[in-house]
Length: 237
Image (cartoon, rainbow, N blue to C red):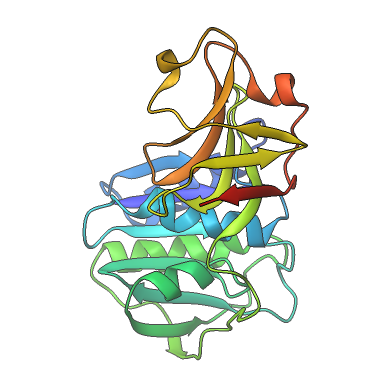
């Protein structure tokens, strides 16, 4: 299957254009819209979400991930073979945490053909490369050293996404036990699930994709605590 993660949103035609290109060049291959509201323009924050939400994808899955404010500029487009899956997207740090957490078997630079629009590599470079991989062909490529972001921490202690329930995802992996979490001067206690806390009470928990997440029972934690993407969090061991 081909799995899409982008910051394109669903109110504009961009996701539909990806589907058209994939249907034309890889007919019959399942295409899954996993996430189209990754943090817009925020490559670093999105980079901590990609491995969390791709960890349960079956081997051989082709992931097209696009958060690409530098599209058409100096950054390259790449195909990364890591952890038994293929990742296609911009070489701008979006796959930094994938490369840290999974063995990388191959990294290649994708060719940009003359007909490609400078502002839409998702459709004109990444989707065709994914289609070729899905149909057993090799996209036009040459070996390439993945650009690394060595200064980025292994876990990002801030809010990286807020969903429509008002739950706030952090860039902290939940496999590191925490006794508490502080956000905007409020100390939060952990809980196993929503109903373990009184109605409306904020808490934090290990979400189903392996990240620490701030929530409230049957309420918006973002509204209750005044949270915004980018807010720092302080974990307590």
